[in-house]
Image 1 (tube, rainbow, N blue to C red):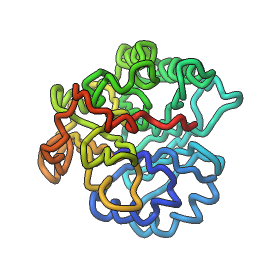
Image 2 (cartoon, rainbow, N blue to C red; image 1 turned 135 degrees about the vertical axis):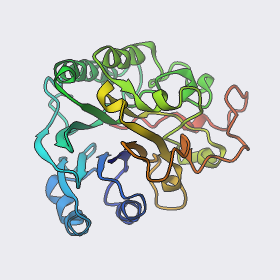
Image 3 (cartoon, rainbow, N blue to C red; image 1 turned 90 degrees about the vertical axis):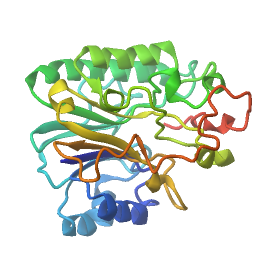
Image 4 (spheres, one colour; image 1 turned 30 degrees about the vertical axis):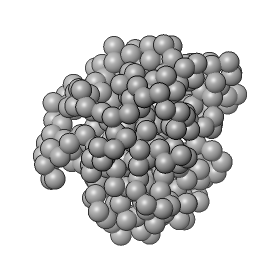
Length: 297
């Protein structure tokens, strides 16, 4: 079973890219984030295309920012919208949706950005992650669980192209990483690092300042899972081809192949970046300062 997550950064704007990618990559389950559509608008835009490709759809959005979805041709049962215990900003936002797909409880998550460490949105982010931890602690002992999506956290310094560029910024703070660590303590493993512990892997590249061709990126789109799912992983990789060209999201899909790997164990980022710029971590250049994420919702 092929399971993927992708922050699509506006499903309406990326409709042709999403459909092309589904045909090329042929995932069985897809978690989408930042759809920026209402439930009705998402179905109106995608229902026919997805139905013809065998996907059932669950979407949670209000037509403004945020918005998450699960597309599945491996079953879509017991759909639940929202995160239990969501602290709200001020009310609950459409940032979480879950369903049982192929015997796995799958969550599509769009963790709050945090904006700046002084902003109330940062405290909201930490409270939201604490609520997620409580959910994981309850579910993990019961059976296979995967939490996939844009976590807006780079787990370690190795997950950003140059940590000096992020001094004083969100996404790399000790508190955010500690909150992510509590998810691991609750029973989740980072499938990318389980498979590729020492490789350079990014999932997001800012549109500005040629960050993608220079490979000035961040790994903030994560695939976390319980040990029973991790034992089935045969390949874990970032589909960089989906980030290339025009009209694309600033994120690339992260793909997990369970039980078998149709394309083989093909590496952490496919195709791999060119050597030029890809080892720039620690450089004194300021050219990649635009990689710091926008303060979106």
